Amino acid sequence: MERGHGFMTRATFSHIGLNCIDPEITERFYSTHFGFKRSRSININGRQLIFLRAGNIHLELFKADGGSPAPDEADGATGTGVRHIAFQVDDIDTKLSDMRAAAKVTLGPADLSDHIKGWKVVWIKDPDGRIVEISQGYQDEI
Image 1 (cartoon, rainbow, N blue to C red):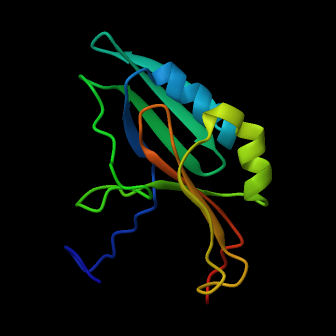
Image 2 (image 1 turned 90 degrees about the vertical axis):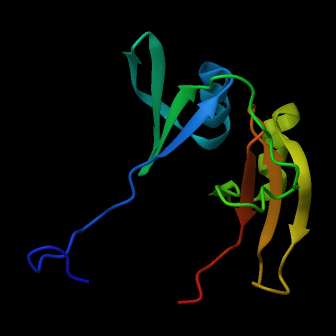
């Protein structure tokens, strides 16, 4: 794929930006349950922006202007936009047990071994109502 003067433009994934009712509560959720750490916090025009990192995954947490429309569907919205955020774990049951009340299950756990051997999935809500998928056993076909 060429662009411009015959050079290929290289792109790498950067981050996901999340609008949050309370960015610090959302930060605690992703830090406590998915290993994110604050990598930076800045103030832009009087508004705090929190940067989180877990390995090569980055989240930016913004203060939302008003309420958060939560998806009605158990595994995420089906219209245009982000359906859910997903994380892999070694054992879903252990993860849900560790999360206790913070694991607001919307669907599952579901055994999807008929599709991918050993694949098990559960969907929960984060503090802002976004759907988060927790998966175990998924492997690429390739």
